[in-house]
Image (cartoon, rainbow, N blue to C red; front, side, top):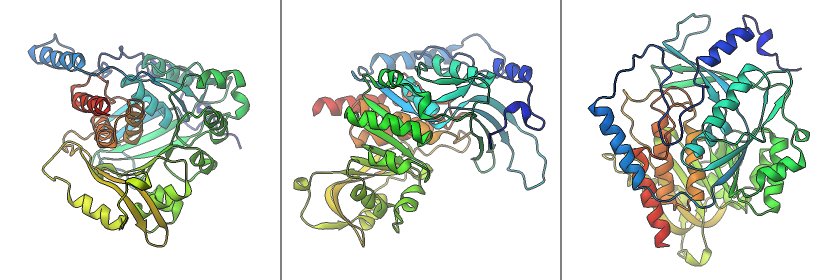
Length: 437
């Protein structure tokens, strides 16, 4: 059964209302990449720049002047979801059959691929997006917002009629959690929507191809072409879904949600699940599990000749690395095991390096919304791969980008630009590590 359009939903918005919402929303074009986005809050009175503003601008300019050059090969092709996010914050999540009022609201572009590529663009990459929207006000607004951020939408399919994907996002101010209710786009994207000429044009010159696990039939078509051209693939494995296994088998890099590794491998722990991952997916160079405020865990495949001959239990090793975390340090960091033969009981042994990454300890008063934090982490990871950052820099860098995003409502509002002073040390350190190699 086809998904209903916004027009047919009970109490749905009229076209005129939707157009008005979009004209007042964040889907208006944003400033160039060198400047942070302007606020769209109508209740804020703008005042002349004061000394504090000038100091902030000066700091940003100094950071920009000291940044390393952008990666030489920085075209990234993404295939996946873009949607309209209807965000509402509430004092606390309502009980069944309750009524409540929002404390703030926002209409903004969303979707995993749309968010990750927006992040990649703000960091300086040249992203291209394969996805599908309708020719409704939401679809038009989504395209405008992506283009304003520097995402190439030339390969985005626009259907006549139907509805663009959209998501209701309820942000609980008390628990700092969010609940998402998604309605897929109609008609859905199918492989025939992407012509051979568009596929070849989209993938031409790409340094990396990224999938968010959606649009699986079209994604597999793109992945097979990337594999033929030996272009590395990064896949976001958020949950078990149709066609995901095929994408994983062609992937060079995998970023997982906290629950996915054990659900997919049926391993008893996350570290042992990572060993299972590398044993089953022989093309994968590394797999990362994001753990929210607990940071992340990464297993990178290594060369056998560089490893110690003695096998090390990966669960015990992970516990040892976690105990080395500095609880007094607020900024993200990374702890490495060095190359070892890592064994998981009842699963097997792989040679690799285990990394434990920490997250920024965000003060409660600054934490606003975690929506899209994982997407920003992936966007930063895309940049790090293009810049050849080592994991010791990549993981803290991606965690920092995600933490900055969490300080504003919505998946995209808080995504930092490359010139953000809070990113300078990571970008410089990554460049120095590459130069040393």
